[in-house]
Length: 96
Image 1 (cartoon, helix red, strand yellow):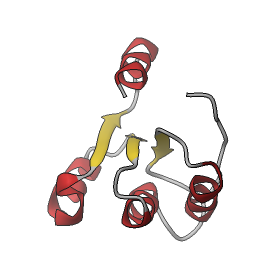
Image 2 (cartoon, rainbow, N blue to C red; image 1 turned 180 degrees about the vertical axis):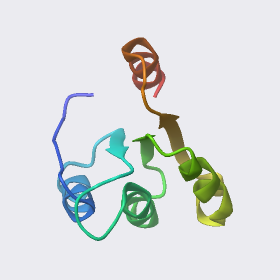
Image 3 (cartoon, one colour; image 1 turned 135 degrees about the horizontal axis):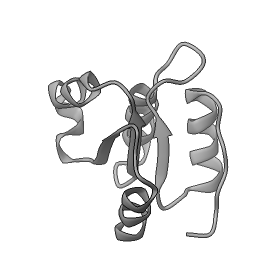
């Protein structure tokens, strides 16, 4: 992975994805603005179904929210509940 960028909102995340086409996205569930990270992930994956997304969140209910939406069933999206140990995050990034 050689391209890194930071996006503050869900809309910026989508714009940055379209611009840079990263191999892997790390996104937080709670974002400023009207959309959350799961909504941003869905938008990205609707346009780029082979995208890989790692979502970080402090909200345990996000895993249930993801399971309820059948859209994500065949997508490469993983949820990590904060706090996350850096070694665990590094391992996931390396494997993806």
